[in-house]
Length: 160
Image 1 (cartoon, helix red, strand yellow):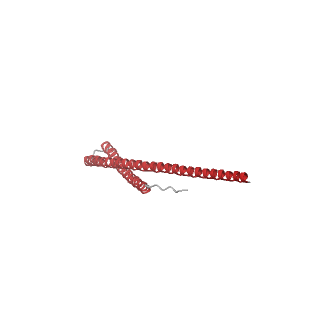
Image 2 (cartoon, rainbow, N blue to C red):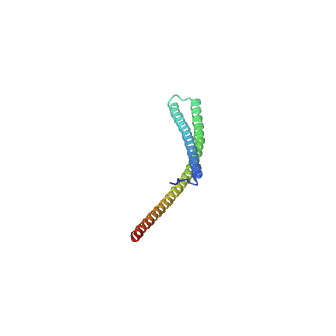
Image 3 (cartoon, helix red, strand yellow):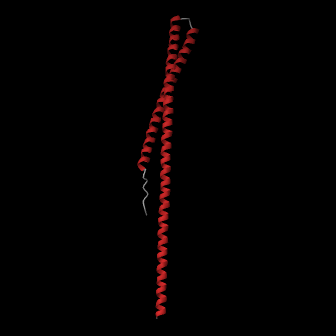
């Protein structure tokens, strides 16, 4: 029996590698997004602590210097949060771009897998057709030999 060999196997292998690379890039981008979001969340928690401390300072004996320092710290942390939001958004865009590339790579791989599957089905059809042809030829040959043998027996009987 003939062995199936897909002509574009090298292309399919490349598509698998491209998909694996796209998965790695996506995972890296997602990890970076998670990291940036964690930094932002940490800054937000610090801001909340400063705001809480500011309320406590206003309830205690008024110390203007501490209150001013606290207000500056809150403004500073707000700026840091704003800057961090930009980093988060940038990381989010990178994740989306990586997702698109991964989706494209997966689609290309699936297309080539389908082409391979179709090629294999065609191969099986050709093999079945060849085997059917062989069987038909064998049956025809056997039938022809049987007819010859019967004719020889008839001739021998008529001669004898």
